[in-house]
Every structure is written in C-alpha cells, then in structure tokens.
Length: 406
Length: 135
Image 1 (cartoon, each protein chain N blue to C red):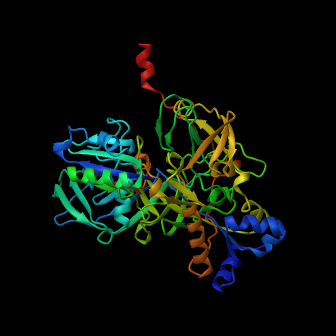
Image 2: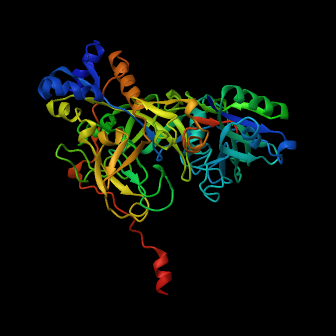
Image 3: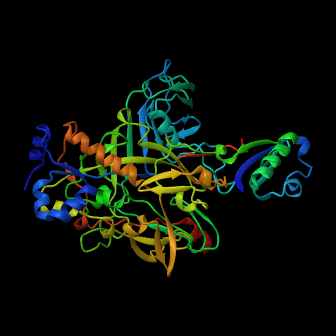
C-alpha cells in the first residue's frame, strides 16, 4: 500500500497523517481496517516504566597527567562504575549501588541512591563527583582522581539499554502470609493486591506483535531525545504463546536501544528506588509504526481488552522459576483498578505510567507532523517466531551439586 | 461540631506529663491518636484527630498552646511533589484513606483525607511524596 519512503515524503510535505496507538483503536473501530489503512500513515506508540537493564557509557577526556581507569576503581557520586575499558571510558548500569549502601541488611532496604539516580542527575546537568583509583603505568602515571564533572564537560555520553520495552509482562501477586518487596512493588499477603507494568495498548511491541516494522536501526523517541533500536534486547523471546491476533500472552520480545544522552531530558530518565528491591531507571520510549498495509492497521488497533497478561505468584512460582500461571487478565481489567482472583476483588497497581506513555506518543506524533522526525526502514529484522529463538534458563554446571555429592 | 487532624509537638518538659487526656476531662473532646513518637532529644510528636463542639475545640487548642505545645494542621506535613510525580498510580491502591486517587490517568492528592501514615512516602519509587513530621 505504501512504503516508508512515501511516508517520509509526506512528512517532508507536512501531509502525513499521524495518530497515536490510542487514537487508532477508534479509527479502526469506526472506519474499518481497510479505510484506516488508507487514511493513516503513521501510528505512534509510547511507554514509560522502570527498565532495569539500562545504562550509560561515556568518555571523560584525558586528565593531565594521564590516568588509566581500566583495571582501576571508579565511583560516581559514590556509585561504582564499570571501568574495564581503556583509559577514560566508563559504563554505569541503572542498578549499581554504593559499596556502603546497607541494601537489604536493614530489611526492607530503602535504596535511596544508585546508578539510575546518577544517570538522572547527569542528564539534568548536575555536577557528579568522580573519584577514581588507578594502578599507574609509565604512559598513564596518575593514580588518583577526585573531581566534579557535568554532562557538558565530557565527550561522548550514550544511553545504551540492553533490554527495554518488554512486549507484555507478568502481573505479580503474593499467596504467602507476609509482605513481599519485589521489582513489581510491594505485594500484600494473601493476594492483597496485583501489580502490573505495561502501557498495554500504547506499548510499542504490542502494536507490532511480529516485529514487521520495528527492527535494527529503527529511529525512536528515547529519553526525550532521538535514539535507535540497536539490536533485539536480551531475553528476547518471540516464541511464546500468543492470542489469535498474535499478541504474546506474557513477556516476549524486547529491544536494545541506544541514543545520545546529551539530547535527552531528565523528565524521561528518572532514577527509581524500589523498597526492599533496589534502584533502577525509569525510561521513556516511543516507537513510530508505519502503516504499510492493512495488516499494520489491524495490529496497531490493538486495545487493552485484547491484551492478556499472566498472573504470577511472586511468593512461590516466580522466585523458584516455575512456569505456573494462576490465570490471565486483560489490561482493560487491570486498568479498571481491580481484577477478580479466586472469586475475590483484588486491587491493582500499575508501575508503568500510562499518562506519560500517552505524552510520549503525542510528542512523537508532533515531531513527525512538524517534519522533525523521519521514519526508518530497519537494517535487519528482529528475530521473530520463525527464528526459533527461545529464552533459555540458566544451564551452567553448578559447583554446589558436586560438593553435595562428595 | 468540629473535626480536625492536627500535629502536636511537645517540648521536652511535657514529655512525661499527662496532657492529651485533659482534652477529654476538661473540654469534652474526642480524640483518635494516629501516630505518637518521642524523638531522641525527647521532643514528643503526636498526630491526632480531634473532634468536639466548636467552643470546646477552641479552648482545648488554647490549653495546649498555653502549655507550650506547638500545633500544626496535619495537611501541612504531607506534601505531594507534583513535579516529581510521574502519575504511574502505583501509590493509589495502597493509600488507606483514598487521599491519593486517580482522575483518568492522573494522580491527585487530597491532603484533607491524609492521615500521614507514610505508606506512600515509603513506596513511591520517584520520591514524590514527602512527610515532614519526621523532620
């Protein structure tokens, strides 16, 4: 029906018809797939949630005299960074914690500051204190560094998240008699609440369930700036059970995304403290989906009632890696504030912000309409169902077993 | 008839004296203690829901003030930092008095309904709720 080049030409002329994934639901309902596909060029998606597999790498420039941080130790506001590149390249993951954070020794821990917060502070332009120890070489004689840096002082600063934008996710409940502190929030005993984390009908990969248009090189909204899909994310698992319209009935596809941190905004990259669990980073992502044909119009018309999420017990099944699913509930039910479980009304809590997801989809829409953002054809597709890729559990040879045998 | 939630700061010298009981004895007021604590420097802090006839209510408050008890309305002590809030709505189902609620997909805070239990302060991943009675 139309190619990406044709869509970009329309964007250039200011004639592209762009709607959000939420708006697309009603357009398809009212006009049907055929007419919707004819009229709409692009559907924008969005999601804003806690995405732990996020991090940044950056280059601080060479000190005088030079220091080789590789093989040494580096802290940013007290949070350890990964220094095992060359001299002055660093990586910082969202879940890093200061060495002296009590963690869960004082249970449940507060986790007030960590990697995610350093990333937020850096993006916000705040001064970050870097303290480093190195071992010194003939060419890099310096052994210590204690200084303040800002995002403007450093060279490249890149957000590189190895797993984001999960295509669907678990709903967490707790069958036990005690409160549980999890990455899906605080779970009250005896199925006291149910927590979920997905933008549902606005979520990028739920609007392109078989990865027909989202692939390596796809240009996206990332953290308030422009980023790209770098690869499929870790734990990418396309071969899960799907509904009739192709929607995975649980965590499936994921994205690895990359972008220039200097263009981004602390509004869309927020440090997060999860009580009893740890620190993380909330990330805003939006992906434009070209309506190439009727099939894409149909996929992007997915609504919360079509998307089912598995309810999983985080007291037993999840920690023990058992695959038991209590039941499936739709995002329509989840967003109503209650689900029904064992004949009982259970209140639900989202961890993903739907209003922010909407704001992202709207922002991306206006970027495209104003001719500031063009669509891309993927350089290579993400592995799909046909790839046979399955997310394997740990299968290393554990040493503990051998000790037990002896 | 008047009902209000208030925060009382007791000076050191009052920490071991009966005070609140006199609100009942002398002024016929009802109270419900929502929170009571003594800080390391022995200053006492109490969150009360106080109710009674308007006139008695006024006299009870005067009595406390004359003793040197500092009084703040409770709503001053819990703050929703809207610019930090991402409106995820995570807090809403935990709030026991529905002071935190949702309007469409936006979080709202009705400080008059808040009992300063502090659950939201502990839970909010974005530190968007602040409670000041602990300061």
